[in-house]
Structure formats: C-alpha cells, structure tokens
Image 1: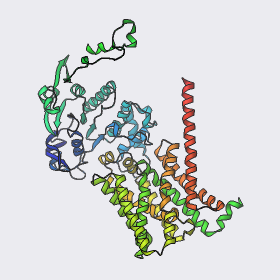
Image 2 (image 1 turned 90 degrees about the vertical axis):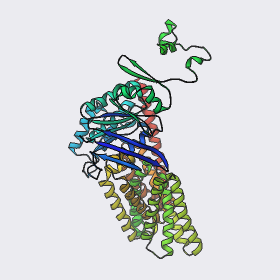
Image 3 (image 1 turned 180 degrees about the vertical axis):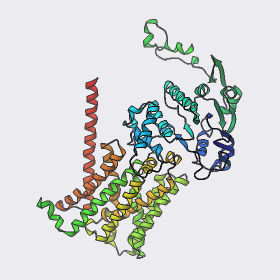
Image 4 (image 1 turned 45 degrees about the horizontal axis):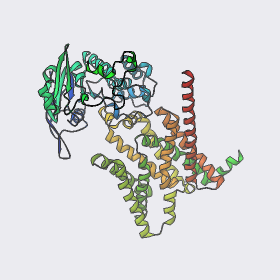
Length: 288
Length: 281
C-alpha cells in the first residue's frame, strides 16, 4: 500500500539557514503519529511542508507514491495552534465550522441545506451542537479545540494535521482531546500532530517521530522514548520510568532541586486550605 | 420636508449625494476586510500612493482613472509582495512604498506648479465637483466590488480569518489577495476625488469599527458597516449643505459621531449585562 504522504530526503532552507535536513517520513492510511522535539526543532516547518505551504529546498514529497499534481493532492485538514487564532474575530462556532466546506463548489454566500446538515452532524459528533450560535470568544479551551477539529472533520479529509492540539489547555481537557483523536483514528482517520507533551504522546499515540532538524528516531513509544533517543533529541538528560503499563518521561533537573529553595520566605510552608485541620503542608503532596 | 428636498433641486448636490452614498457604502463594505485583517493603515497609505499616480498621469496627460489606477494597483501589489517575500513587515512596507509615491507626487507638483486647485481637490476632496462620468466610474467599482464580495464571500471570510489555514483548505489566497488589492486600489481612486487623500482612510475604518462595536456576527458587520457608510455619506452631505462646511470633512465627522454613539451603546450594553449577571448571582 502506498503511503498517503511520503517525504524522501527532504530539506528546507530559510534565508540560507538549514531548518530541516534529510527528512524521511511516510504516513500510511489509518496511521496516528506524533512529531516531538524541542522548540525550534522544525516541527511546524515540517507541518507546513506537508500542508503545501512551503516547497522543499531539496528532496521529494510524494502523495500516494506520486508527485502531487493539481486535483490529486489528498485533502488534508489542518487544526492550527489555538494561540494563532484571532478570538475577537466576529464569527460564531457554526460559521467557523462551515469554513471547512469552502472547497465545495457552492458559489453563494449562504450554506445549502446539505451543508448546514453536515455542520450540524459534525458538531453533534463532537458534542458541541449546543454551541453553534455562540461567538468563539465565549468558549473554553477544550470547546475551542473541538470547534477547530469540527472544521477539519467537516471537510472529510484524507488526513488530519494538528499543530500542538494540547498546548494551552488543562491536562483533563487535553486528555479528552487525545481520546477524541484516538477514536477518530480507530474510525480510520490518518492523523499527524505535533506536541510538547511527551507523556500524553506516550499514552495515546502509537507512532512517535522524534526530530531535531532531522529525524532522530521513529517508532512505537516504547521503542523511541528511551533516555538515549530523548537526549539526542532534546540535548538534555531525560528520565524514562515504566509504571503500571505507562511510560512516564521527565527531564532530570540540573543545578538545583526545589528542595534547595525556601517554599515561602514569610511563612515557610504554604498550607492547603482544604487540609487546614490536618496541618498537612500542601507541597508535600507533590512528593508522593 | 421641503427643506430636505430643497438641496436636491441643485444638480451638483444630486450628483454629490449619490456619490457620497455609493462611496460611503463601498468604503464601509471593503473596510470590514481591511479592519479585520489588521490593515487599517493601508487605506491611508495607499491613498497617498495613488496621489503620486494621479499627479504623474496629470503631468503625462493620461486619463486620471487609468494612470492612478495602474499606479495604485502596482503600489498595492508591491506592498503585498514586499511584506510576503522579505523580512520587512506590512506596516513598514506600506510606509516605504506609499510615502515614496506621495513624495513623487509632491516633487512633480513643486516642479510644474500649475495645478494648485487639482492638488487641493486631490488632498481634501471636492464632492461638489462630481460629474456624471465620475458617477459612472463609482457605480462600476461598486458593482465590481459587490459581485466579488458576493461570489467570494466564503473564501474572503476564511482568508480574512486565517490566511495560511485558508490556503490549506483550498482557498487560492494569492489570487484572492491580488484581486483584493485591485478592488482596494479601484475604491481609493474613485473615492479620492470625492473625499480626498487625507479623509479616505477614515471612511474605510470608522464604519467597520462602529459596526464591530454593535455586533459579533461577520455578515451583520458587513451589512451594518455598509449601511453606516452610505447613511453617514448622505447625512454628512446634508449637514455640509445646511452648515456650509466642507463635504468630505462633514461626512467623516458624521461617521465619527456615529462611532461615539456606538461606543456609548456598547458600554451601556456591557453595564446592563454585568448587572444582569449580578442579579442572577
């Protein structure tokens, strides 16, 4: 089976600076992969290459084993980082999701009945149909992410590309979003995402691509998340712990630990108001 | 009622009010995209650039619309390309291209010194000197812009919301950007004779900002901004007639009054909303 997207020895230069080099990746139908690496590793640049927003300086990008020509490019839907969105822009949830239908040849400014139905269906699928008429500014972080996911899904793409979908939202919501992506993948959707959350990637994503200007390693989380690969990727010492079937990754603090610092210069320890009666210092829970 | 009808007995006023209505609506409509794309300064800059083109076409005895049009379009494309392909930001690109163009106009005027009246009209507008051919030109641009906005509504909305993402979803943003530059240049050229270089920017920015204060919906913002632009054009014309004021300036002041009113309404709404929340709590 030919991969949906294949990058062969791809490189990218910005103003004489080599941003990406020797990138070899192939993503097959139904694959769920996460790109991880430090800031400045070229993750977003790589996504932009895959999305067709940049042309490679060298190497080849193939779709279904061929050079893409107009009309044969697989439909890729993109979910940008939430922080790049103008939240004051005057649009409702429904209007944002309908943007995903822009490829369809309806020249009128209004939506056809079938388009309106498609929007409603995807909103219901992501359990945000009650927010359809809400302005995007009035949503929580998780709801905002679902809206942009809905816009991507309504386009019925061959592949979903997400740029840091868990950045800026709390861990519980991030977990829900990753569950949602896993469900979509189980339904056959090909997904590529970037993330800085290694633990979440280890728990939810079956294929990890470690990169830092070039591909360091790719494989299952167990194969890739090793101290050696992570050190090569992040240029920093990482601890990998196997605990109750989970992979837990933590950067080893260097120089000092929080135990070297005074918890509070005035009262020494900060008490958790909920545990006031027990006089249990709040920071001790972190040690457990 | 008779008082309101009285100015309409003068052909200069009839032409002027139609021009103000059309230009106000046109600037209000296009201004929504300009303001939401964070390009408010481009109207100001590009009108100065077109001034240079107008002077050049005068010196070379070219048709005003053709000379200024080509010049304005070239300036808009140059700004776009400079901002896209170099490290120079859009605001700096606007600053360089438009002031250089304006300087060419001023240099030519100082060299030839034989068109002081046209110079004043180009800078401050002369709505009372509108001819039927000006009205045809304004009408043509209104139809062109109206059709493009109608048939590219979804693409323009997506591109304005997020240019890069729109490209991924199949919107031909480069082509649409060029078309937008062409529409903007055409709008500025037909507006220049009416409002003048110095006042066009206000007509492009104030109605959409006012509309934004009143609604959170894009299509309503388009409608309200177009309506405010057209209406303030007409009201401004009447006020300028009755109070014997410069028409372009009166139109802009009417728009400013409208903006202040919207600001008050928005503040009042916010207060009412917070009171309702407190009552519920």
